[in-house]
Image (cartoon, rainbow, N blue to C red; front, side, top):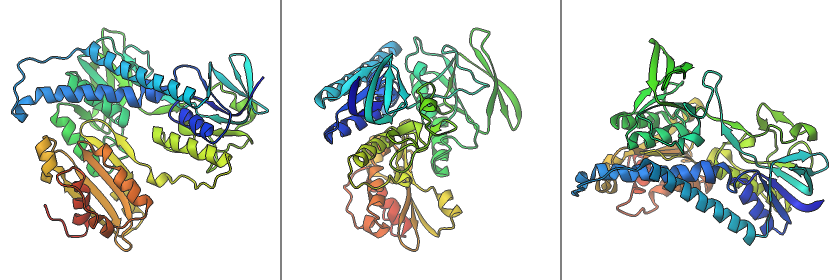
Length: 458
């Protein structure tokens, strides 16, 4: 039996980052993967979807070349080539993880891993043991009883990335990050898209102003949106698919070629031996403490399988913290109130901290500032004036409570707010931090200035 200091089950952005950090700390490390190194994120999620979205963005630029004083005599799309480029990007990233495993002398064990008592793990009939076993098996597309996926007419995100032909009509059920990103992609490619959202607003976890702006932008680009709506029945017997949608006005039947179910995720914890070991679970989440230890000594869990936010960067941070704690380092528990969330449709969305509604519900006296990109020189020059930056501060102490952005490139801007909040900066300190001109990031400073009644360019 092979013996390790640490074995990581799953090689997504939680698992492979954990394994690398463990190796850096001097642990003899192995990683178990049943499919492709990099997990869902690198192979079927974060990375290949961004490649699809980039193709959509370039296609949008070609459509609007005249807005920039340019003439494009002929342009078209090759849907198959767009998909192939996305898969090529994913393959390159997976090979990059293979290189990192070799560089860091991490053993890769291929196969389905199942936990065993006594700090052991079985992989396709071969047993391995370790002082510490870390579960990082991630999640998959969740299925609703009223919306069973057949992989052909009712699909999840994996099928949405590799459709053999582009659908003429698509219904997207759910308007979280996955739903709106695919809605933007397919709409840009020329598919007629309808979003069906159960809650009153699209991207419902975001600040209401952000939700309303995205709905305006999407409708302007031709996406149909139905909120406070629920798919109650699906008929796939014909050539396409029919969805019965219940709204406050009654029932409506929508017809399309394909329905994309984007109603959240389900953790991959089945048949991995949790019951055999006695590891505590609440619904579909593995229970852990602040340093990702389960109730059974020697067994840990990180990423989507635990109760924290199901985000790649959260999984990576949790894994690093977990192994540093195992190594005896002094570490602080992760602050889940300062985790940035990013959505990569167009316009992009990025946020951190409390929404305005959440702050008011807590009874905090707040200062709110907002700066629209329509007043930004850089946004005007770039032709991307939709959106804004919104900031929320504690009126008494100046604490930066929240930051919410929607617009071009905002996912690359949100880190300023995350770092500022981590360092406990105040609104006045942000105001006195010189921002470069002309940039989109100026909007952060201007929004803060608006909160304090000092805005210049509004």
